[in-house]
Image (cartoon, rainbow, N blue to C red; front, side, top):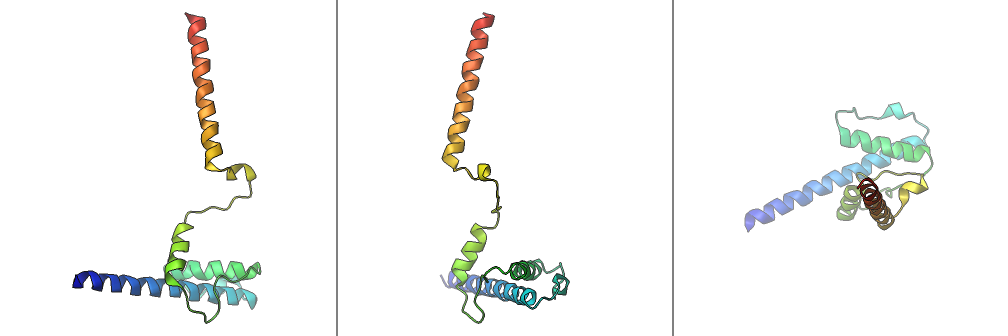
Length: 129
């Protein structure tokens, strides 16, 4: 029981430091772009992927004058920020409306295609026989 509490405490600390670092690096990049500094002024080398990526993403958001993801000097809700980051990790934005069909419509289209294949197969089999 004591070991579980230690592990949970260590995980919470690790989560807090990683998310807080991500937020602060992101805001650092955002502010650099707002001050019209070049992207090449990223203080992190590419070996520190988390900090480098966070700073770069913040820089591009600032470059395009997007609203900031984090408030300066505001406490970070580490749990919701980590869940949001994990949930959106593999999300790809697409401007193509056809690729944004709901899953049900895609499944229905697949079933219709399979049904058409079966009907065509039956027609070919009856014509050959």
